[in-house]
Length: 97
Image 1 (cartoon, rainbow, N blue to C red):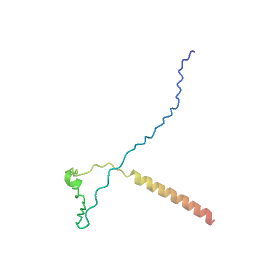
Image 2 (image 1 turned 90 degrees about the vertical axis):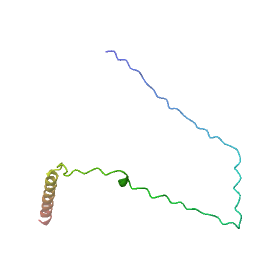
Image 3 (image 1 turned 90 degrees about the horizontal axis):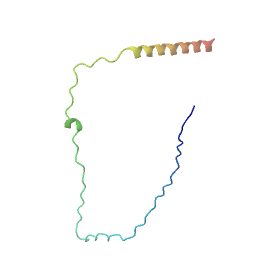
Image 4 (image 1 turned 120 degrees about the vertical axis):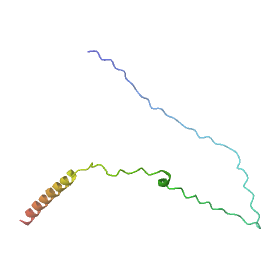
């Protein structure tokens, strides 16, 4: 039997990022307002967004929903309840005796 194979070796790469230093000056600060002039302060509140329910018409619900559920989970739950009750009674009887 002759087997040919290719060996793939991954070598880790080291990537070094460099930080560059930028030199310059900041712009001058804005001039201060005169002391005898009132300052207008505006507080903007966001406008109330329209509710999405009003924007998109609601899809008409079907008159009768399809019956997709069954009583099988209820039967399983009752079986589990009975099983746990039997173990509890057995434990109680062995502790009392």
